[in-house]
Image (cartoon, rainbow, N blue to C red; front, side, top):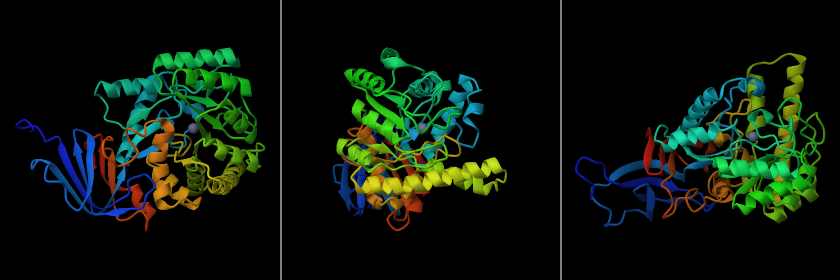
Length: 418
Ligand SMILES: [Zn+2]
């Protein structure tokens, strides 16, 4: 029984439909009973008589209940408003923590209850979580790698994770684990950082192998950024647990050389791939919106158009080959916003996923890839009460995912605009 004056630890949430995040089709008239922040049971029609009468009831007629969403690839310390990376990293760590706080809040209000951060500067993301644990920040669950490991002068080197050669990589993994990271992130190719090369491997297979082996010895997973086929083969050989982007760049002009043998090897290994299709989508949208005219800017957006179209086609092929796709946006990078996961889900529909599969990519598949599937990612008994509701039916209009009417994180109602 709840003490006088304090709210009941019980909630009953009713809606018209439920997509549980497992990839299964929707069921009608769900009733989700929540006790002390966790899902006590999922029923149809009515709640069991054993639920106390003082339970808080949330009625959401016409709405679809979904698990709290998971964005599996964000950079909390970056603004996502078009500011160049090289400009943002001139700010102090304190400013970056404040940016991260605002970004995480925006995600939570968009129904994203778990964020997997793929790299920030020094201890900034870990500091944000420390503040969260002290009760100063009501934010999504944070899954953190701290600073990403990169070659000297490599992609995101400003974040402070430079390491070269197997011994330095082992040392960097150990020092990150000492700092309290949840997983290890490595840059196996260059990327959008000025001066880095996206279409060539940065690390040798031996270097990646040393880092993955060390992380696994301590029971931590490894996600590796790869933008070319050669690097992806090294990533697979090293036994990494997740591949970020998995592009097939062949040159500096955005051309890709899709390699079916590499894609099949990814499918065979069962290694999940984080899609980050949003990056190209938002760059193209922003550049069109701003009516960019200079020759350099036109060339930039043309290159991104090519990369984006190639990525859609490549992911169609990979999905058909059985590659496990995880929804991640790369929020923070260039123009990618922190409330844009619904766009990634819509793009996954274009790649060939059904609506329940695309939602699973942004919930249970992401949670399983991170090793937290026993805690979140589906609506089922025993898991954290991370759930959202959207007005209407995502199967007929995936756009409804952009505006959740109800957001609950660990049993706490974050948003209830219905
Ligand atoms: Zn990224």
